[in-house]
Image (tube, helix red, strand yellow):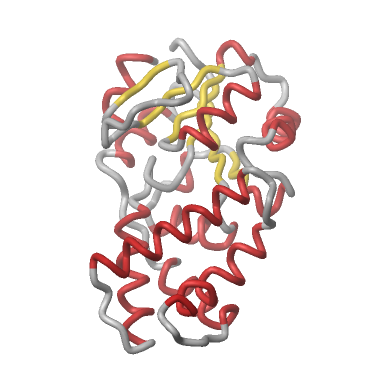
Length: 224
């Protein structure tokens, strides 16, 4: 094996976050009296992605993102809601979204026999644990690292310093991060001085250069 320590992102890397999000938002919007159209979904995702980008760049806290996003979104529709309560309701739906992405279970279970696997995620701890457990992926990871409990988020170097301290001793030259996000996973890996594998399922253009690029998780074997 080229690498003996593999750091896996969760959403849209090993779990299908888009499917979980769609399922959760459909229920949530229905309860608010709205049909989840493509237009509404796109509007929400644009707002949500900007808020999480602000979080990655340390412009907002995680709590600010979670506790304001639905208030801000429904305000655009001319409706006032209790943003914290709506977030709590959405979180309950999202926690049920345990759809695996592609062959992630077979791949992760196989790689766990050959290397040390860890989760590194900016998600919400309770949500990620529940989803990974429901997807039967949890047993294959030696430890789960979540920004919520660490106090720092990807791509900040402090996040990775915490991870490396916990899993020490670690050979950075034999450590790689696998993820779909250029701004958090790939930039985070570069900040931490480790190699990166970008899961570029939609063949996007890269403004940050990863060490390796794959289109499906199955292609990871060509690198490892």
